[in-house]
Each structure stands twice: as C-alpha cells, then as structure tokens.
Image 1 (cartoon, rainbow, N blue to C red):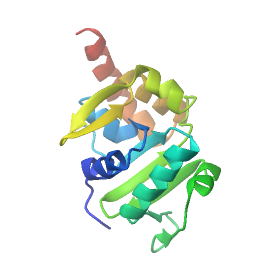
Image 2 (tube, rainbow, N blue to C red):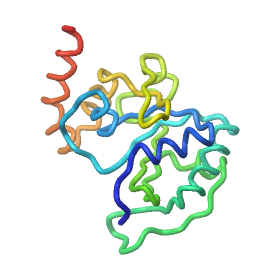
Image 3 (cartoon, rainbow, N blue to C red):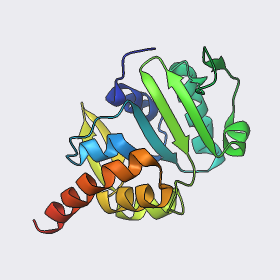
Image 4 (spheres, rainbow, N blue to C red):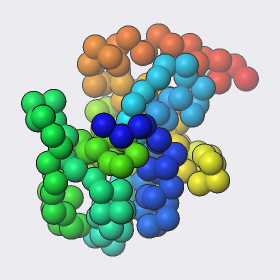
Length: 164
C-alpha cells in the first residue's frame, strides 16, 4: 500500500483541470479537524469533458479498484462514460486511496457542495473545499460508525467557526 499523500492526489487532479469538491475526512482536516484519515474523497462535476479529464488524471495516478475482500487492487480501464456509470469509485493510487462519489450522503452532489465551498491552497495547489457544515451534513446522513464517532469533534469545530 502506498504512503498516503492527499495533496499529491489533489495536485494531479488540478493539473488535469478536474473540477471537483473535496469532502470527507481529509476536507475536515483542512478545516482544522484533528482526526486522521487515509484517503481523499472528491465529488466531481459530471460533464463529459470533466470526466474525460478525471479519467486522464486517474491514469496518471495509476488508479486501481480497491475493495476489502480483494487481496490486491484490480486494474481497470475507464473513460468518461464508465466513470459516470459507477456512482461511487473506491480506488487506490500511487499516492494513496481516492474515493470518488457523485452524490455523497445528505447532498445533491457537485452543484450543491460547490455553492458553499471555499478555495484553499494545499502545497501550492488550489483546491475547492466543501464547507464544514456540508461535511457534517454528509457524515450525519451517512450514519456509519466512523462518521458518528467523528461528528462530535466536527460539530464543535463548526461551532467554533461560526462563533469566529
């Protein structure tokens, strides 16, 4: 398994001009969360042109399909059409794990998340970052154990943000 380097994954996406919003645990870290994660979660804009750029970025990242039941990640061939057909992609790359989700729990996807997203710069790479409120909303809706454990910390961080 490669060492996790979230900013390197995001730099490749940016270099290919992929329009996406960073969400999930790594986005929460950028907002100041102390909770560690080992993957990047992005929500791409769904146009064919953007998904074509995403496919090129995934090739550069040497992305493979990962699943808990697999001993080794599976290579896969992809293009804009096949990426759009799978609404969630759990991948591993040469820089660590990347999850692509078109409609994260509790959201309506890219346009919904873009509305309140902010642009930040990570290691020189501009990144569109989901608002902390949207990250909390998504984790509440997902209801997974790991999300429920993270929510008290994220809600406290959100309250601190709102109170200045």
